[in-house]
Length: 174
Length: 170
Image 1: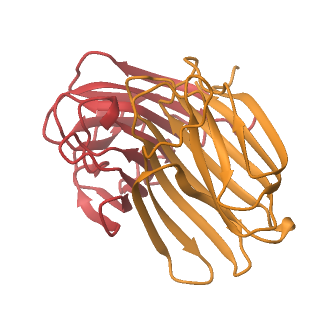
Image 2: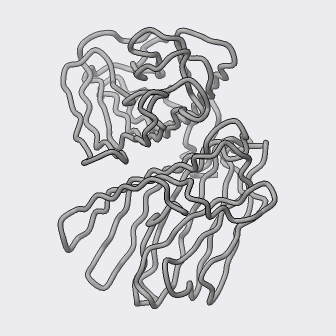
């Protein structure tokens, strides 16, 4: 049925891991959705994304991104960058379900080798344990390399483990 | 092929200020999609969400934080932010003309997990007397307890007609 979601890949973290990779994006569907819930770290950290090609995270400096930062502490920010080596995906995650990261991401054009790979990103978190502030990005990002991509790689910027969380990749039925 | 977006319940109500959508959250899903595609109102105001506890009671304690970006066609965009509210206020807004309608999609994260907070991510579009209003909102219920449903409420006046549908994202 059009509009339905078909699960492609999932990773449920119940013991700490350095990173999580969801793969399986191909030309079966035009658009894919990634759902993250209750993701937290072994220590306060900052959550990041890279796009994968043939399952390998891309570490080149070809990521552009921009977002509006919703938060309860003050005026909303605009966060943007070009030619970065990752996608900054959060303003911090904490160490339990009360300070977890939750997100809906859509992936566009990933399987098309003649197009850039785009994502839209909406997320909500209680930032990290130290700040304990409601925070969320509303924005998008692109990997400006015209070649096929097949997934997303999630990790913490300061190297702390991902201690918990559920990561799922879906295809959006045409 | 079985879909992983699974319909749970649809509830319609008429001539009422608030109503409960009960027994929609369970251990079968950890993320839910709430779709509101019909609201008829004759009083222009914002609408709120409260969560229902494990006994089905609406939680009105000051345990909600939320932040929203309000994008309108008739004035400068506005930001809103509050902590310690008794509801996630201003998830959407509807006006005085019944035909104007509204659209709202919200995701609810981790409601049934008693060890985590319940988070909300939403976006809506409605028509007021001045023009279009769109709202992007994030919210949290800052109490680690089991949530079983939602309470959808008008800031003032009644819903003349309203329909809310709930899906689980498996």
